[in-house]
Image (cartoon, rainbow, N blue to C red; front, side):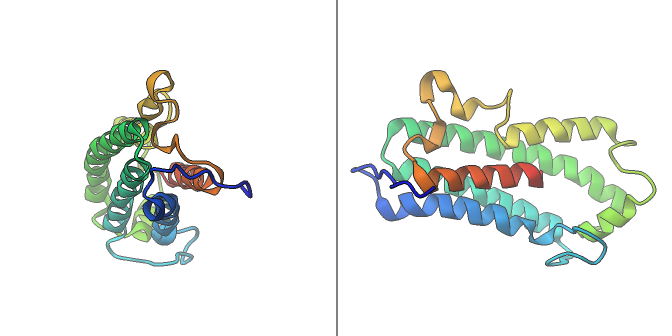
Length: 181
């Protein structure tokens, strides 16, 4: 973490340095609407689901700018792969979440939690839960959907040029998104 960052000579330095920060900050800001306990939520929005979709959709821009700003064809190809996979699975996650919204009748996370007081929606909506779980694996680039990091041809995907704190921020953001999902 305190190692000297290696900056590519052909990189657009400001964007190259800001891409991991943007990815990490967006992954933290997404947690603002998640209720941790009854009445214990940072921001109790009535449109919490829409907020979460909007913030998770913005995470694609951090990955695209990381691949583009390094001026490396391998990083750019990895970023394109990752962005295409993230955008395509966000559509399926959105359609799956609509099922839960129809059952609850609200976009507020606190009301969704209260609606599951008797039984979790994962039990009566088990096939939908399985589709959501698989889509979340693909959205977070976990195996067997880790195509953006295809070791055979792209080595590490969009973060191939990153070292030190930039590399750590990308992975902290990625793991924060995995826990969020």
